[in-house]
Amino acid sequence: MMISRRLLPALATALAEAPAVALLGPRQVGKTTLALAAAASRPSVYLDLESEADRAKLAEPELYLAQHADKLVILDEIQRTPQLFRSLRGLIDAGRRRGQARGRFLVLGSASIDLLKQSSESLAGRIRYLELAPLDAGEVGRDRLDALWLRGGFPESLLADSDAASLRWRVDFIRTYLERDIPQLGPRIPAETLRRLWTMLSHQQGGLLNAAALARALAVDGKTVATYLDLLVDLLLVRRLAPWHGNVKKRLVKSPKVYVRDSGLVHALLGIGDREALLAHPVAGASWEGQATESLLAAAPPGTEAYFFRTAAGAEIDLLLKRPGERRPWAIEIKRGLAPKIERGFHSACETVRPQRRRVVYGGSERFPLAEGVEAVSLPDLCMELGAT
Image (cartoon, rainbow, N blue to C red):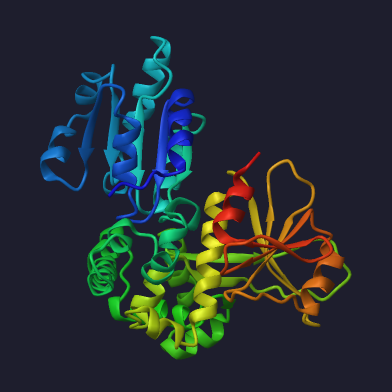
């Protein structure tokens, strides 16, 4: 079953305007499917750099790729052969001199830090970056919202035949990342230690980062925890949501909030296999908040800045989104229930931030006013509203 991805038009535009495009996202998120869909209307060649046969074709990359100068070349899992970026630079510059300046290469990568470092050194001014996240509430529609929350947004997990099959897929996904993918990237991190950190972050989903407490629990030092966390962030598996740093005369919380980006992975790490177990688990509210946050960020225009707001006195806004070109952010409160209520802390925080719009996301489908200037809205509807120009 195919679900259309909102990033497809942006990818097509990028290929029409830039010589090279990097499509970043975790493994199994649908990058290859999206890339092939974008290439369907033009001659193209696809190379999987995890395949020995395809890597062999690139033993002399300039010679091989020059034979396909009239095609879109898709290079999957580019982080396996980062040295290719040097070759791509020369081919792009040669193509520009012949008038072939756009849509030459589409590179797909699962690890952002090494990819960005290599490409920024070799392809500055020649490459555009797009990030493909797991499926979100705006893409799957209302009928699959409950499944999206429980199973997460990785297509094979979401569309599995049963909750049990979905959980098995996610357990295998986590094991593969820990035992195969991360060691291939270079860091020598014990798989069990990283699993424990990942599980701790799931228990504390949406909580303030306390690196010292994590270090004590893992019996490592604070710098080591920071390194491990950076790795999970760079693999696009964990998000650090920064605190609002506006010029306000209040004592603001300065630690970031940390989310495991896919709710299905949260539940797999915690052993939650079905909806009944999820609803009974203490992480339910934070898990839904994380899933809503990821959906809203995926729906927001590129370049949107994301924060949360919290003061020492208890004033709080779950999510602040500042879209490009707008002077003031949107204030978004996230509630899982069907009868949302606004706490005094939200009103107090809005008086300080003075947001452009005030929205309360909740678990229902109708839209209605909660207070003056504050509307309750469903998650799919707010995704649509955020994405509108």
